[in-house]
Image (cartoon, rainbow, N blue to C red; front, side):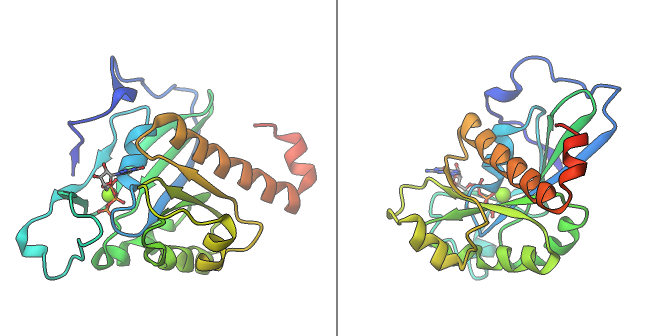
Length: 212
Ligand SMILES: Nc1nc2c(ncn2[C@@H]2O[C@H](COP(=O)(O)OP(=O)(O)OP(=O)(O)O)[C@@H](O)[C@H]2O)c(=O)[nH]1
Ligand SMILES: [Mg+2]
């Protein structure tokens, strides 16, 4: 595993240290099909230089990796991405980006362990590629939101996307550009709000006592 050398503006300057008061780590997973932008999202929004496990895609993988929809892609995640966002003096968000290729899906169940919630990224040109992610999250009972990453794919109505993903009305569905830091932040804020809503439904009293 190597630290990512080429990184966006979010890590310019000295790297922020984790406050010594930080004692609560919240784990979020970014998951979805092959090449939907998981590494890009973790990279754009992390306050530290993210750890990633991208490897160059070589001709040896041509027979097992379906690269038809991600033609210009030259690297793929083989374990996971890891980034961090400090929420306040005590709370830190740890971001894990899952590997998207089917041959690495066996890692997902372990990655989901202890996860507060998940972002399912979708490329609307190939919606079905993210079905399995939703299936596994539902299996684990992990709350999630869906974010359609902007690849300039065909325009679908929200209803069409919900139908294609068999998505319940209670699951937030947003659009994003994973390359854009503020857009990625918006996705994470949507997830956190969704988690708060769920907690409020289950234990309204507890939420009132612990403002975030
Ligand atoms: N047009 C466009 N391209 C994007 C966007 N997000 C990511 N990309 C590009 O899509 C390609 C795949 O992005 P990755 O972040 O590697 O995708 P991934 O889901 O991590 O891929 P795997 O880990 O191999 O499954 C890269 O070349 C990105 O630059 C986006 O919002 N719009
Ligand atoms: Mg990746």
